Length: 478
Ligand code: BG6
Image (cartoon, rainbow, N blue to C red):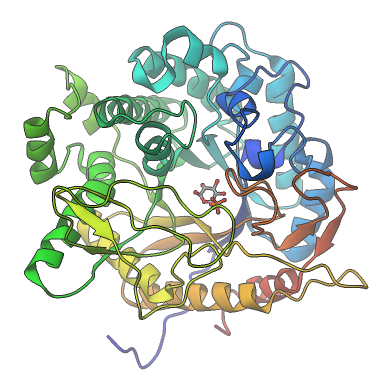
């Protein structure tokens, strides 16, 4: 559709920016925090770009007041951050570490004092190492109760202060890396174990949401999904089938289960034949049905384009972690689908398709299929930035990316999508899990690199001043 006139952004639209505990906080062993699975994993040789890790990250733990002052000056309406489970429960369960919780209380109070709405993510991948060691983390059903207990602590203590909650961040992307590609901890490559661990994560998500209903009746909660809407490589019926397979296995597998409480039929039937389907026990379906969220959180970076993949075809391959453009291999599941570059869109240096229209159509697909409001919990551009003399960062490429994606949001709102807000990934530069510190996303530059934390100085990029203006105009000039 081509609209003659676009609707504006609604009043109260959450113009935000986001981060995650492991990527920003540092202070990995401070104030009683226990180790997470990432603390150990990043230190294994060859796991991350140039061996980078989040021991110090950008030291947000100690500099959050300075960071929030920059948010306030920008006029930011919302800040999305995650709570580190092992800060609260160093062993994953057992006694609460009050000092860990106190950090988040201070953070939230400081945000509130500046009229910045906190958006709290309960889990952004940093599982307590103790639970991995005790029972294999997500591979055990025991995690459902432990996760609920951790969440209930936060619900009880923060119900009056936090209205927007994100349950699991990118369960799909994180567990695919953890159990299919072996590129996130615990580094397993086994599809059967993947689908089972993923099933437990669904149960944990639903259990947390069910508890939330009683404890935070005025709050809103939903998962954040790593959403790459699928395109067919061509109208060849074989590619169309591959596209359908990809939609079902990479998107609906999660979104249907979150929003409709059941797995998509054709995918489940296929996995039953291959012996990879998760074990679903009596009671699981009832619990999943209690997990319907208030909104769908999406992290949108790109669309993916799919083609037919024969049974002896491409297998799953990892992402480009170097920023050497054009080095990403085709990746797929034999017999189902494989990725193919889309000749109609530009890509970043990490080979991610730049596709604002994909955001618009993705928002429409989800809104029509599930009938829920949507919160964009992440969108942004990871690129090399250059710090120029006089403390200037001219990131016009990032401004162009954000501008086009915010314009796509406005089109989607005009299409009828109930969009609650938009969070730029990320507020400051932070650690990019596998890509070190050189793949920068921030509106604020942080002066450090892979090996040297330097002085961690904060410097406003051109995109900072640009976004400040967008917020001030409530997106009016887009
Ligand atoms: C999402 C995550 O996968 O995308 C973030 O929720 C992550 O934590 C972001 O940093 C960008 O990905 P990457 O790999 O470029 O850092």
